[in-house]
Amino acid sequence: MLDNMPRGTICIEDIEIGMRRHLRKQITDRDIELFAEVSTDHNPVHLDESYAQDTIFQGRIAHGMLTAGLISAVIGEQLPGHGTVYMGQTLKFLAPVRPGDMVLAEVEVTAIDHRKRRVTLDCRCMVGDTVVLKGEALVLAPSRKFD
Image (cartoon, rainbow, N blue to C red; front, side):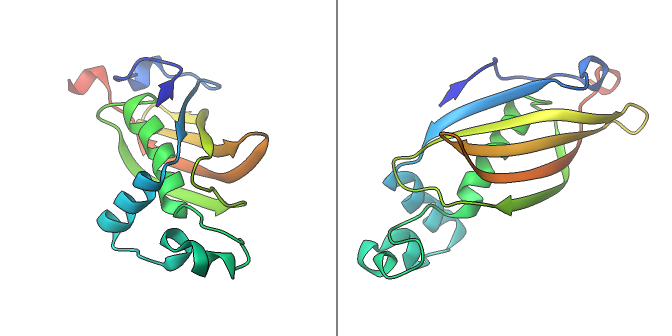
């Protein structure tokens, strides 16, 4: 994985509108197999090439939630980072991610409620110039007052 910032914590007191963080990860066959095991989602569109050839995707695709998990990684490791609590997430899956694709997962701060320690993040994943997933996350950010 390739990050644009070190992992750790950005406390609510230091978060600003427009802050962005991202990571890049190439999705491998092993990633898809491991996600199928952990999630118990063994849909053959993810695991069986001959089955997947006869679908609208014309080949295997990664689980959508595997791609969404990259957003979770950026939020939990970079912005806000360690100590963050997910409160909600919306997702729209716009295009498939295939084995071998390099996914860019990015979040951007769009709103901050300092009193409630809540941060709203615009989220998206891209493969090349194609947006494959977009959404919004609401998180409870860590604070120095509680450390």
